[in-house]
Image (tube, rainbow, N blue to C red):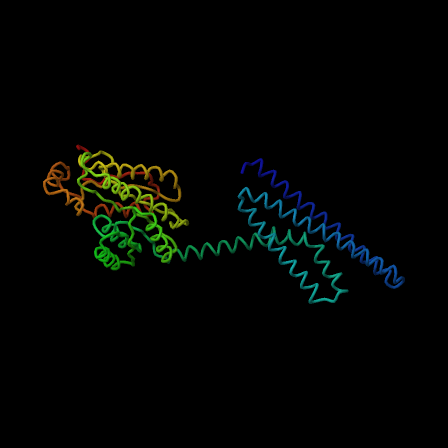
Length: 409
């Protein structure tokens, strides 16, 4: 909201308050004069008393209508003012409505239960004519203070509850390899881990068994390349947890042969579906579950192939390049509440790497400055760091963990 528009809104609010105060004073004077006039005539003229009381009652209806008009006007102005999203105005508006309902209930209670008709006209109306003033006192002084106190208490309860709650991480493709190591490491760090898998249930159960040594976990079968399955996974997670703190998009696949002139259309599309659409699907359905009370983290597992290219894995390299682009794009969109980073592993000792063959692995080790393959646990250490509060100021980054392989290849 611009300062000019805000000032205009404030002026309107104060004008309305002034109108209500003036109305309150006029109401108080006229109704008391009407009542005392009637009292003077009560002993001298029955007809005069009746006429004066009739006038009093007419005034009562007129000013009741005016009062309702001012109340509706005030609420309308608040409504227009609230559309500027001023939290403080919203709180005061709530107080105003609460006060209105509270005092109206008191009047009705007085009208129909506590007093006779004769007493009611005097005592009940006394409550009505002082209504605007009472609303201002309760709406502007008592309720905001009470609201603030309740807000503080609620925040303390939420923080205490959150402190006692376990952090939750979702790791896709966590039945084997890098995903398995990340799931176990996060469990060591105190996270409850949702272990996603697609094919190997026995391996997923083994991961769960290791996770359960540290915290608790659960396994969910879902093909991340299929939106409906990811949607069901998200629904299952939301049934078991209030929210999640970390999403690790690890699920991926290299389909061989991956050479540009040998890969089939089916394998090309499947590679993109698993590695690219899988990341998007998981972010699409799981982002709403990320805890909104703190900075949360998304970590995408990319590859050095996505940065530098490599012979024989065209579709996989293209897919991982897309993952890197997704990471940087969403880091801009999701900040400051969510960090989005990517890890680009080089050649890691996993089943996927083993399928490349001993000859290629030996060549890779010879051409890697560190002279070996990386271990899944080393990738897991980096993932755990990027998923922690220590990395709250790191986003949109692609971090290589390749033993220096990319330096000369």
